[in-house]
Length: 308
Ligand SMILES: NC(=O)c1ccc[n+]([C@@H]2O[C@H](COP(=O)([O-])OP(=O)(O)OC[C@H]3O[C@@H](n4cnc5c(N)ncnc54)[C@H](O)[C@@H]3O)[C@@H](O)[C@H]2O)c1
View 1 (cartoon, helix red, strand yellow):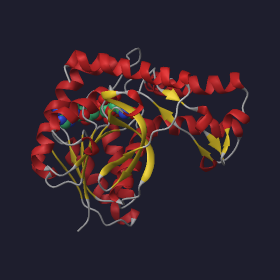
View 2 (cartoon, protein in one colour):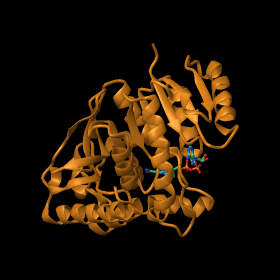
View 3 (cartoon, helix red, strand yellow):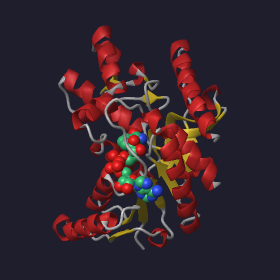
View 4 (cartoon, protein in one colour):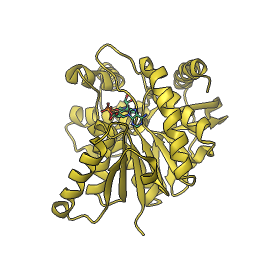
């Protein structure tokens, strides 16, 4: 039996995630959206690409949750994206209502599934999904760090004029202005980038990483990034479906790790078939620790507004 991934929200991120999953032949895909016709049309279009992509997977689109029954993973991208001038936090109240509604319907159909939350503001939406689902923390994971570190890696590879494959990078913290890129754990073939790039240049790359989402919103004007975000959600999906035990930066519900208790925040996680199988704790410098705590305080504030 093939694995099954449902994607709620057949907009830019959701439909592109479906595209990556189908083109990698990872699983059958069920696309869901509130807008009539959109998931059906995109699903059918993608299905018709499969003979050319040489992939045997089913892709369906519908407005009802019956189609999501018994999913292994559900990726939730439903909600509104940012427009120029908006912060991710401006989406809080609208997306909270959408997330609560979506999660209750998803859980009724797929009680054993693993949820990957993408909708913004990410950490508060992951916390909403966790509370609403009643799942254990291993099975409700937020996507942000894979995207933020991919942006950081792209900029570092460009700066050093090397393959993106030679660069690894780590970004911790919340998805937003308070994210914490860790240059000393970011390397070119194992060599810390702090040895290779001048401090002021590195600082401007870090700032560009923090502003990576806004840079694209400014260009697009009517929406936000979706190729890299969907690729990031699918990297997490693949790690889980293939039980890869891959260590990726994900938003996880912390219970004392890193001195944070009761909130979602981006930390290194080992992903396998059970979802988050380990939260990897690393020793932070006092400055990094302070930046992470500041990030957590921002998440806490948002969560208190919506009471999760
Ligand atoms: N975590 C990240 O790093 C990251 C990156 C990019 C985007 N995002 C977020 O992901 C979300 C989706 O972004 P997008 O660019 O795909 O937006 P989009 O507007 O293209 O798609 C969102 C889709 O959700 C649907 N939707 C709305 N309410 C729904 C409901 N109740 N049930 C089912 N579907 C519903 C809409 O009809 C729309 O098709 C946004 O909140 C955005 O901010 C997060």
